[in-house]
Length: 201
Image: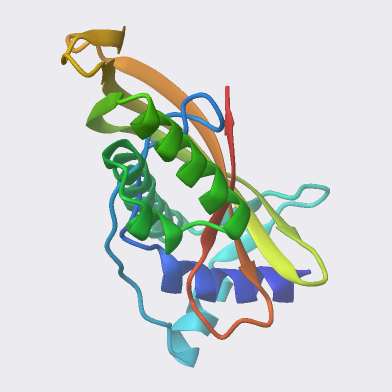
């Protein structure tokens, strides 16, 4: 199992896409939008050093990272989180499609199209991430998964065709708690991870 986590880690840090956008509000979370990309694979030497800083908790699916590696990984995850939320809010389907699994992409697209059909405008101000925590790692025969808990602050409103606020408060900062699961196929040579699931607390 430690080998699978080691493999996860190398791709993990090779990943952290610079895209992100709000979570689906009614379907999966809030809003989303944006993109950008970062990351390059670790060479073997760095990978081995990184593996040394990881200790797997006994009887737990959560992995303990060396503090410096945990900080580096979560920083990248936070960037992706903000980009996806922003992209969804803007209705940027092209950017979202590069960051989501097919099912998630369909859900985000449906939500954006429904919003557009109702002529509803979404406005989002991403205040920042208060905290992010790696909750667990999972592995199946075909894919790897990791779940991150985000606690963030946003200002989110929806306006009608007349620019009247119909939901939210433009002067109120809202605290949001999300649990995002990212996935990558084991057989894939791509370093990219994709958002597979969103849960709200």
